[in-house]
Length: 252
Ligand code: FPP
Image (tube, rainbow, N blue to C red; front, top):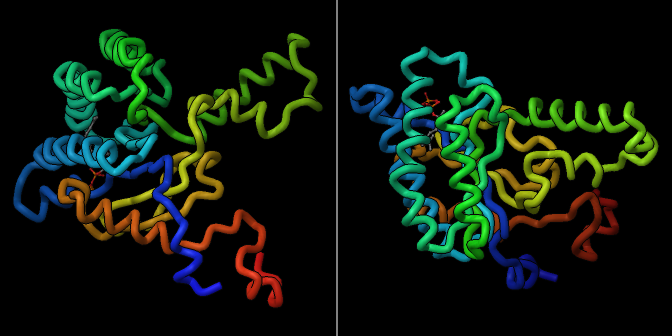
């Protein structure tokens, strides 16, 4: 089978996850404050949500604030908190009218009560929508998520609600923040950095990774389509074998 034949039937991923990196450098390159980079990053986020819907993506996960981002100066942390609040308050009606379902993943414990209420409202008020699922990873860290899941399983085991021997991959996945979402097939990171930075470590076990040089505020339709085109060229084997020609050399 030629690679052309193999690519012919490959469709877009159902779930795309993005590490939106480079806001600060985008601003710095223009002599602007970092906050302006984040503001323009929010414009890029809005554009990407529209493009994802348009391109038939079913789930879009965006890494908006990591558990490590608390180490940034207080002013930047509170600006990012304010940006999430502003986004939900200003865009929720429009998102809902576009049939978008909003999900927020990450720990809510450290969020201010008003922000917590707002994200809960965003989720409940869009629960019945059937279009794009927009997942905002906020105060999210994969190790933190796995730790919280492990604590719940351990508590269930101690209470006798679950037999430790019955804890399999599905039981762990059910405890993750993403329990109701499919795994991402594609993870994009902008800004040219080539790290995963504690993002969806469990869920991205078999994802394809694309590291795009563009800074996040400049991520546009062309950059999105380019990443999807690269994805469609990839040969996904999930540890198995694909093309018959691969078998003779035992490619895993
Ligand atoms: C990484 O760029 C980006 C972030 C830590 C925040 C991402 C936020 C947005 C895209 C704006 C929308 C926000 C919300 C909350 C909805 P960086 O600041 O680390 O860039 P740098 O590596 O160039 O400094």
